[in-house]
Image 1: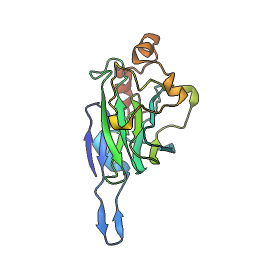
Image 2: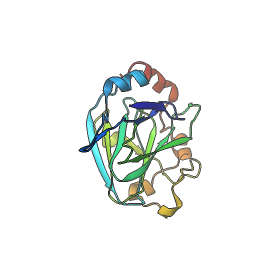
Image 3: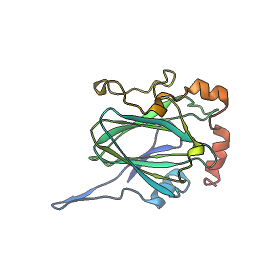
Length: 200
């Protein structure tokens, strides 16, 4: 697999190498040792999740309290979507910025997102099936939302999708400025120390 770090540090795009023959194809969609060699730290799997979205649905921006936070290994099993990684770490050189990766069932790309980063997904097809492996189990008290429509962040959705379809929770989510004022965002320096210690 080919791994490249995104413009947001501590997030990576993973492109598998498929082996094709007349039966179909085979690929390694996840490999812990290759990831650890590329990222410098282990990814410890604690839970797997799947969401299915119709075209135009936007989920996120979501993040979890740190530590421990929740690292995510995200891929699309069916259909296509845009995965957004948002830097919400106070003190980061790229605070408030984002990067994105097209995830689809053709390229079978994945994204590894470290703890403390915001995550959103926009479905480009009906029945876009998102699969994500996470480093900690679901804890609703530690989960938080940031509106994906925050103009300060400026996520760009394809115009042909029309108005984004959001959950009531995501529609009511605060802006980056509101979370910053409330002291509700992860700290970059603390997270860098957490990453350097291997996420423990």
